[in-house]
Each structure stands twice: as structure tokens, then as C-alpha cells.
Length: 624
Ligand code: PLP
Image 1 (spheres, rainbow, N blue to C red):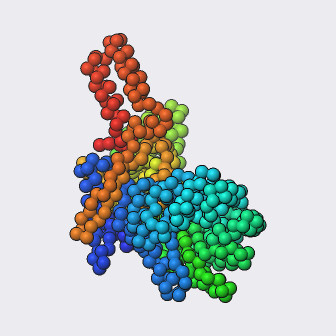
Image 2 (cartoon, rainbow, N blue to C red; image 1 turned 60 degrees about the vertical axis):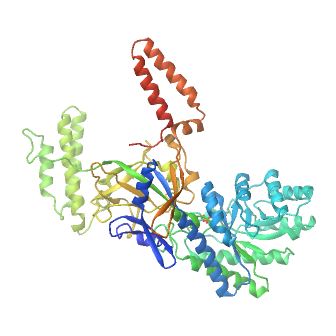
Image 3 (cartoon, rainbow, N blue to C red; image 1 turned 90 degrees about the vertical axis):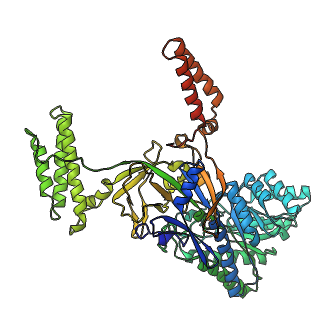
């Protein structure tokens, strides 16, 4: 557990059992139930759900919603804040139907609503809302159809806000609401000058592509006044960026938003709601620090800071406390999903056995490499490193010019590798090491080939260098003796993972176990519930993975609540406009020609057509 830092990033949801298995921990009152993930994987295999697969633990989703709502309720009560909190889950963070259904179900006791950024998401929100006290917040560009849908919702009594991203949208809202005779609920998204740290800092500041500038905001107010509809302006929205690592930025942002809120009240708008957007971070690294993949605050601190900053800013102006809205996405769903995959193969970067003596008539460079191998010690690591590369490259040069054989080249490369291995093992004993030598363990690391597609299942690793905790889910009481990087199944050099979370910071390699003959080795990428599924793509036509949703029960068991089989080959082919039936017909024609030419027999033709059809219905990933 210590090696992978699970107690740092696991947030009490994940741990390692005495038997060496990664476990999910769920609290039932005072009782903690721990379920080994490998047991769930075995259950999945029995049900024909192969790797790779996304495993969702419903209890964790429920727990996160509860924690967020109760943390706000505590902060509100303790501070004597005179209004309540209403969360809205941004659908874009995980649009999967069963995730939204679960959020709507678990969230209904807190009136947790939904945030929609497009017509499709509004349709989801309208079909999933469980009660009239929950809110729907509509962000993003809105056309007539979008606005009409929202207005109908309004007429049915749903608190559906249109948040203006640009001044242009207002004309359509005014025109449609007049035409339908329905008063809209309007919010304004402002562009805060307060900048945040972390990856998403461009969501705030003057150059943010979202939100109204101060003068555009006043234009909206004036237009609403002219239209006699200022009473519809009730919400102020700001979003500083996702994954905000520093609590001070959040507090400063709330204070600035409050100045706008007060300004709008001064202008005569009724207001009543303040929406602080997303930004509540997830501590992927478990470092509790102000850095991109971490955060220097906890959930309670987040809520207290927002509540206190609101009070501090609004009380001196005698402004009634607004309803607090947050659009927390990743903090709600990241923990509940993990990506599980098996390792298919390992390419060890390890020297083959070396003869005890140089073969007779060996070239001088080979004899020198033998001497360097004997000579390596903690005092001369750099010298031996330089020599090994020099003699190896000289041998390669001779090979290029036809003056060395393929066997001589292989021996020189193997000797150089053995020397580098020795150097790498002696590095901890050296007094000082150069940058070159520091990078050696990574160069010497193995490649573990995993049965997954980075582009389909972990796109943020590729796109924005996101870090997720990764560890084996079993054999954790055995010392992992190999250091490795991970490669996926796509034939793309970007399809690899070579940055890993460790208790001592980010490392270039991951400690892993040697594969055992005839036994699967499973790894899990944790905290992948936010953004990964729909951002993923079909690179190399690897499709959606299998998905399983499990509920852990008080008796210590688990129920398979939902299971979804991933894309078949026919599915992914049809996404790129192929017609599987037509493809079979084309293949049949080629096979028939081969029969006619006498290259295959009719039974062989049948066997090939059967294999073609079977493949069409198979999983896009590696099947054992
Ligand atoms: N609200 C808006 C407007 C967003 O753009 C985002 C994402 O960037 C979110 C909410 C969700 O943010 P997070 O996942 O950080 O909670």
C-alpha cells in the first residue's frame, strides 16, 4: 500500500487488504465493509465480461453526493448563513445514462439538480429531474429550440435558468418568451478578473472565452430594463476553471463575484442565486498540495470558504444571502469509476546471459566491453556508461559497413545492456550522478503491454498529461521486482503511460510484479469517473469497453446492478459508415473466387466466412 500511495489518494475509499488485494471500502454506519476488487473481476469473468472494463461502485457516487451536500449544510449552519445550498451536476462530466440516473436518484434527497451545456443535455436533464426543488442550469450557446424547451420547463414549474454566455442570446430569449408568454429565469455568466492556478486557468481572466465582460453585462441589464424584464434576472454565474488547486483562488473568486452580485442588486435586479460553477478539485496525487493534480484544501474547507466569503462580502451591504449553487463535477464522480485491464505481455529490457569469456577472435571493441563489465563500480559509473555506449556504437558502425556480423552486433548490444543494468543497480551507492545517469532507470524499464486503449479510456493522459493513480489489484503482499512503463493496444507511440503517482512524487516508472505463467495480472487506473468516457475516441477502432455497475451491500457482498457490453467490431465499423452486411458480402465474393480458382475448398470457404462473421460480433479488444 505504501509503495503506491493508496492511503494518500484513496480518500478512505481504497486500501490494500492483508491478503494483498486492492479493496473498495464502504461505510455502513459504524461498520466498514471492504470488498477485494479482484473478487468483482472474477464475478465479471463468470458473467462473460472481459477486460478491459470500467467498474463503477454505486456506493461511492452516493457517498460523494451526500458528503458534498452535507458539508455545505454544516458550513451554512455553523456560519449562520440564511439560505441553502443547491448543487447541480454538470452532465458533460459523465453523460452515461446510468450515471445520471444514479445521480438523480441519490441526489433527490438533497434536491441536487443538473447543469446542461447543450440541447441534448437539456433533454437529459428534463427527463431525469426528480422534483421541482431541484434546479436546471443551462450554460453554453442556446438557439431557439433550446430556449423553447427551457421555457416549457419553466411553465411546468421547473426552476430552469438560462445563463447568458453572450449578449446575443438575450434577444432570442426575449423574443421567444414574449411569443410564448412565459417569463424566463435568467442568469448572467461573468468573466472574473481573478485568475486561478492549475491547468484550467484560462476559464477566468480577461481573455476567457466564456462569460460577459463588465460592459456587456451592463448592456444585458439595460436591455432587460427596456424590455421590462429585469425581474427575470435572478442568478449570477461564474466558473473559475476546473480542478482549482488553491483555496485562496476560490475565496478571491467568490469575493469578486459578490461585488458583481451587489452591483446587479444596485441596478434593480432581484437576484437570489449565486452559482460558483465547478472547480472543486480531486486530489489525484494525494499530496494535499497546491499543484495541478492535487489541492491544498478539503471539502469542508471549500464549503466554509465559499459561505464565509459570501457573508463577509454581502453582510456589510445588508444584501440577503443568496441560494448557493455549485456545479461540482469531477469531485462527485471521479472516485466512483476505475478502469481495469489485464497485462498481455512484457518486454523486459534485460540482458541475455553473457558468455564468461569473449569468443575466440573477438573484435577489440567486444573485448573492451567485457572488461568494462568487470570493471563497473560505484566510483566509475559515468566512465563505464560512456565506454559502454562508445564501444557498442563503434560495433554498430562496423556492422553498417559490412565489417561485423549480425552475431557480433548482437553480442556488443547485449554486453552494453548488461553494463547499463549493472550501472543502474549501483546508482543508489553513487555519491553524485549526472542527469544522464538519473534517466537510466527509466531507459532500462520494462514495457508492460496492457489490454486497453489510452485514447478510448484515458484520453486526458494523452491530451493534457493528466495523472491518475495506477496499481495492481492483487499480489500486493509480494514485492514488485520490475520497474515498468505501460503501453496500450493501439499502434501509436502516444499510447503509453510513463508518469506515475508515487508517495514521493511523480515517477517515470511504476513498480510491477513479474507475470506468472498461466495467470492473469490485473491493473487498475483509479479515479477515472470524470470526463474520460465521452471524451474518449475510436483511435485504431478500439470501441467502448465493457461497463459494470456494482453495489456493495452491508453483508460484505456485492450486487451486479447493471452490466453493459462494450462495442462489437460491427458497432465500431458502423460508426465510421461501414455496413457490416455489405462487408460480409464482399468477403464472400472474394472467397467464392478463391474456390473457383481452386485455391481453397468449399468447407474452407465456410470456415473462413464463419470466422469473419464471428469477428464482427466480437469485442474490439484482445480476447483470450
Ligand atoms: N461548470 C462549468 C461551466 C464548467 O465549464 C465545468 C468544467 O470545466 C464545470 C462546471 C465542472 O467543473 P468541475 O468538474 O471542476 O467541477
